Length: 180
Image (cartoon, rainbow, N blue to C red; front, side, top):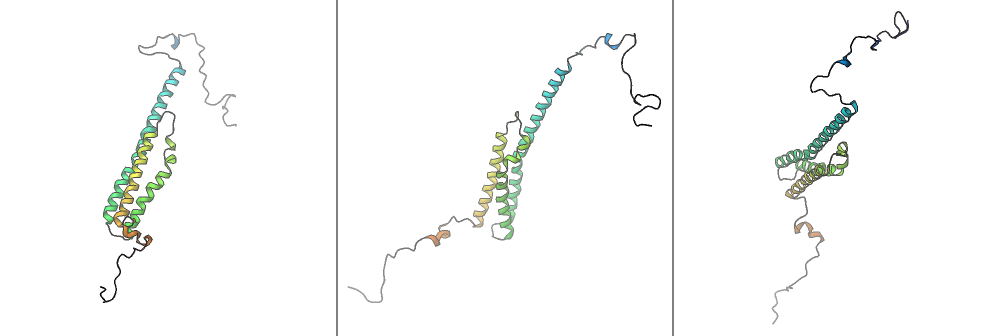
């Protein structure tokens, strides 16, 4: 026996004939209930598709703002870790400091990739991108500040002494003879 064939006959096994061949009054003769309108399916589909597109655009904008504000959490965590590391130069504090510098730099390089899933004609991504950039620049500034507090940035004159010319001699002194 072939699959999909009826036991008796050539039609499909579960086929049902919905054609109305009776003379009894059908549902088309019954009035619609109050508040029901028979709008064309194209109008309903366009309205629902427009609503779905608007809802999707709102969802994308909301997620873009969540992504834009996510560096703030990282900023707070990194600040706490830097505070816990102290101001002495050792492996742990240097590792945390360079991690604090690397994360914002890599995030700033990949802003386009990060906001790519949220691109849409109806979604304006300029403000979320600016917030994302500002928070990552704040994280970068925090890392540079930590480098300065560790004394790893050349900000004092003594850090540049090797590149300074030797001072000119102003006085000369001689042995124990007085010259009159």
